[in-house]
Amino acid sequence: MSMATSPQTHLLPQTTNPFLKKPITTFTSPISLRTSPTFKPISIKCAATTQTQAQPQTQSHSSDRVFNFAAGPATLPENVLLKAQSELYNWRGSGMSVMEMSHRGKEFLSIIQKAESDLRTLLDISSEYSVLFLQGGATTQFAAVPLNICKSDDAVDYIVTGSWSDKAFKEGQKYCKPNVIWSGKSEKYTKIPSFDDLKQNPEARFLHICANETIHGVEFKNYPTPNNKNGILIADMSSNFCSKPVDVSKFGLIYAGAQKNVGPSGVTIVIVRNDLIGNAQDLTPVMLDYKIHADNNSLYNTPPCYGIYMCGLVFEDLLEQGGLVEVEKKNKKKAEILYNAIDESNGFFKCPVEKSVRSLMNVPFTLEKSELEGEFIKEAAKESMVQLKGHRSVGGMRASIYNAMPLAGVEKLVAFMKDFQAKHA
Image (cartoon, rainbow, N blue to C red; front, side, top):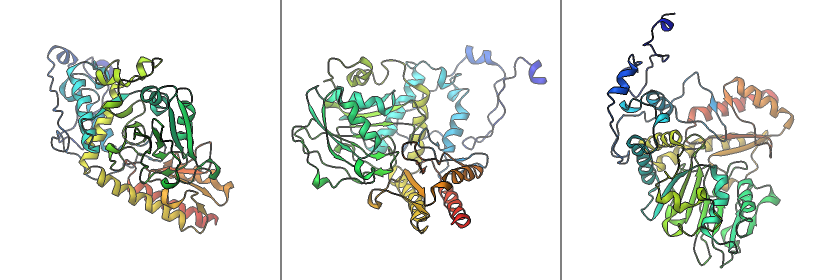
């Protein structure tokens, strides 16, 4: 009852945070925050060389949290969540939360500039490219890409390796003259084509791919070279963005929803070569015009501020881990353990995807006895492993093992799979 009788006490508990030497204490005088704020904008130098707080180098997992295998929104690094928690009420002495900041104030400018700087470091993005923090998800980019990159009568080549590249092609039909030069639909999207067999249109404005199909679990291990006269390769990298090193210079444009590997839902990242900006079709809505956003440094209107802040924390964490080379090693290890368990189950579990193009991020699998799938998902949830149900369009199971999924989560899933097989084989 003491909390109810004290007007100076806030409903925030004292919290211990692994990033801070002292517990986080509640403020007892909100008036002092308003009358004497101390703003300390952070440097926008990359986190690889300038760090304000030491972060753990290993992935941990608290006993009160589940292992979340969701395809997106997906699990986030625990240390990132804890840091965000510690900064939620009063961001670095500013007297306000990031959620309350003006997107044009110096505090948020430092956040978005730092996020961009760290992303450029992670992917070695040169000054020849603009980095845009947008909204609308990758699905909005299905329209924005042709609207910005080509004219309505331009030919465009699409490789369709799953549901998302198929949706991109269908949306593109409204704004250009797209052509599917290869589709894996007849084989239920379990393969990636041989690049030598692709019949590209030399007059095509660009070649579009989905680098990793979240639903079907197929992933490009390398990338085709566009044979079009413009040499433009465009990729939807939503579900494997920042999961491994990528040579950005091979692409004219990369786009990705953040909610798989680098942040919460609500942020869409576009990396676009500068010479491709400024040629939008006349009917392009202002909010889909890359030039508008590039000229305004992603601040033409109010951006998803808190989501961008969270992405920035994730970028810092990825740099702390040693960059994307080290991140890829961890992802390969997790995927190998899970795929081996499936392949060594004598057919009890099956992954339909061709081995050479299996995704490191999204692992679809089925049970030999399909009637057991419901029980599998239910029993796994009892063991604190959730969101293992496959996409409604394909059924079965799917384990999304993004960057933030700790090795312990995959190991626990594999142990459960073996135990489940022993009970039901």
